[in-house]
Structures are given as C-alpha cells and as structure tokens.
Amino acid sequence: MANCGYFNEQQWQKMEMPLLAVDSIISEFAASNGLEVTRNQKDWPERSMLWNNNNVRCLIQLYLASEDLLTFNLWLCASQDRGRDRYWKQENLIKNRPIPEFSEQLFVLLEEGRKKILAWSNDPSVMECATCIGENNP
Image (tube, rainbow, N blue to C red):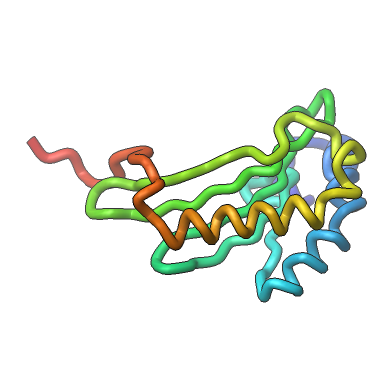
C-alpha cells in the first residue's frame, strides 16, 4: 500500500483522487520546465517539484490540507542553509481549497509560483531565518 498502512485503501483513494485529476496538468508544467514530479512523499497525498537555483532549494508542492474537507494547499518555498542557520521565503498560493475550485487555473498558478521562487532564489536577501540546523554550542 502506498501509504504504509496509515489509511485503508478506500480512504487513501478518496484523499488522492483530486490529485489524480490534475496529474496531467502538473506533469505538463514539470516537463515544460525541465522538472521532475514526486508523489506522496512522507506517506501523504501530495505532488512536489524540487530543484536548485543559485544554491537555493526551490520547492512547489500541492498537498492535502484537510482529510475531512479534501482541501489542498499550493505551497512555494525557497530555502538556503547558511552556516548553522536555514533561511527561507515561503508562501501559499492556494490555502485550504478543493482542487476543482482552482484546477482550471493550476498551470498558470504553477508558472506564477515558479517565477516567484526564481525571483527569491536570485535574491536570497529576501529570505528570513527559519531555524537553526547546526549543533548548539555554548
């Protein structure tokens, strides 16, 4: 089972079904930009595209936000490790909305997101410190 048993097959199919409906849009976008799509990372219904630009990790992710409501978030994130700190800039283009509400605009939203992330990665000064990733030394 794709989800390591957290959900039964019927639950999983219900949660992933909206993503399956837009897989062709996501794949077309990824192919047109030389990106690869990963699916259902960390045993959760999602689609991600990850790449590096100027030493910045760039991520576009469409993921299930609510199991009960079947709503999704379209999340953008650019992050960079600097010494013992991780810096990032992130934004939700879509927050807690069912995919049918935005599926017709999804390709345009993905392109808008890619442009934002590229702008962030070309100017890392716009990122803020998100967390310390190194060992804490007194």
